[in-house]
Length: 104
Image (cartoon, rainbow, N blue to C red; front, side, top):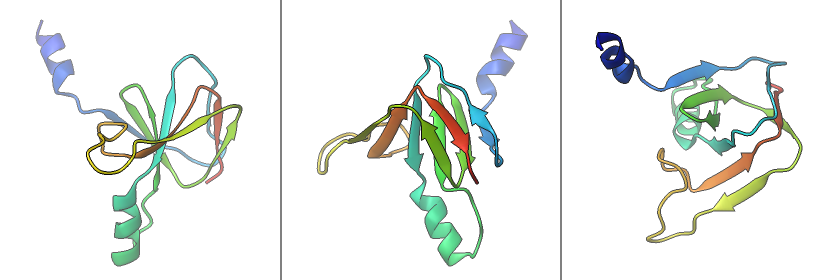
């Protein structure tokens, strides 16, 4: 029981990807969006944070350039009172079950 309680307190997994890594094709949907906060930070603080986020279940992968090898769907939730498409607040999301290759 103590082990179960510890697992609940672990934050979502965050994984940085490197050139050549491949997220395999599979049944889980990969939700890809752009992190505008990192773009702003890179500009104002002259950092080099990755700006592309790939969400697969509770895992988040970060990089700067990808290639999608198969079909995908790009969605916009709309403006105004519409809810964001994913919990982080993203309003434009690309979804795919295809292989995603990390370029940079």
